[in-house]
Image 1 (cartoon, rainbow, N blue to C red):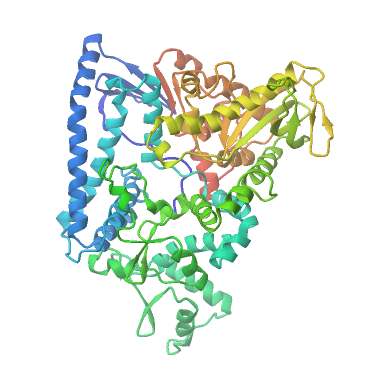
Image 2 (cartoon, helix red, strand yellow):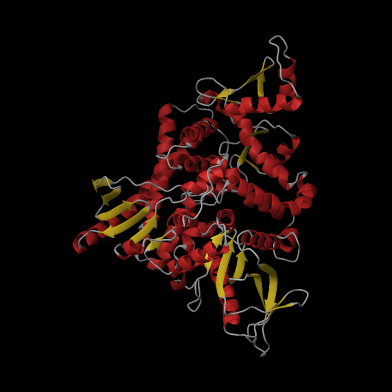
Length: 638
């Protein structure tokens, strides 16, 4: 399973110009100076005007060649999958990911191209039997890597064609970049915990329609990877450590502490209790991870429980079922819509196969929502969505947000789903009644909070501007407008009053500090760091001031790391003004939190004045170590 919360940052090959023992490094890339000073990354244009114009002309001239390269490379990938055994091709790419999982030089590319390849394989009918050579394996790996890199470069330079405005092009680029270089939403235990809480209230629809509940879905996804490890043999022929761990857990649970060499009964019982293990002659066996002839058996799913098979059967597709991925207009592009995000498992001759295990966890919430909607659109629209049903997604997220903020905003009162009349009249001249998701009042401040569960559709992730701007308007834009409306109502009226479902009135003291927050279920940090552009595009209304935007998963980290409300207020007062700076690029809110804990500030103000662009360089390592490795809890260095 993926371990990292943050998106892996792509490294660029650069020419080193000079570097000093002080730790400051400067590198020149096509006339652009990149400076790494501790955990600050700054960019400064060193080109002359003539050099800059020549560079732009060259980039524009190369764009048609880049597109031609992408199209021809995709044609060759299709030819390879039509010619050679797909199980061996996917098995090789899975082995490549296994080797490079912790390789910083690979930087996540092995995982990305494995999932990309799975989309090609499932888009084509049948499975050829011809064995690929090592050269074919390597060619396929290079093709998939180069297609994604070239596509990234093609999108990043489209602003020069003037087909879109500068802001539209940048928004499309950010969207494609987020989609191409996948990031995890949060730490695994946060994701699993949130999933259990959010979907357990809908267990009955899963049971009635599929014969399993939400916990079975999660258990299956975790178990499929563990079972794969248990039937794997490493290149040296030894079993994976997960095999020994499973056996140790089993014999401890059975109370067996002593084994006799001539007594095979414990092994026989163990194999009977663990049917997902492979055995031969009454002993555990497995398949080599680096032997193409064994790939098909290695990646064939063996089920530990009957419930696991029920889950797998409803998220399975046949070869050829993903044919739309190769639609003639945009054949096989990296961001084409693909079924593997909903049905990641391949069915072939009544057996089931899985190669890309991370796709399960990354799409855990989407798959569960897909199953609910597939079972009953009426239930999905009336009970899963909206706030009429107590276990609906929106109601859960509002309660969860209040719970997380309460961890460090002590001695406060939370009010959910309040109504008020902000003085706006309808067409008949009657006061309009509107809602506020969450209001928190403490001794030190007021917090106006809007929660948005909506995310981005597949067309939006491909950079379709109409869809993208519409959905960002519904989440970031409308959330900012709603909290801005409530803020004005509070600060401009000493007689403000909100009321709950029971009619209880809540008056808000407007002399205290008042902050606005928008909490989203989906990670939108890549867009949020450029809120000034969203205003220019009309996604955020001109008169609306910016609110602090944060994903629920990042809020879970803040909730556990921050120790008091004073630190949160300090963070917000420094953070919110940064949204308006076009120089600052921060794709990960937790990098800012890490920098804040270490420096009590969010940016180096002196440095910011001297550069064209400013980014933080992975400031969340201590936070990662705390959540992933049980390290020391990071604290603000007062």
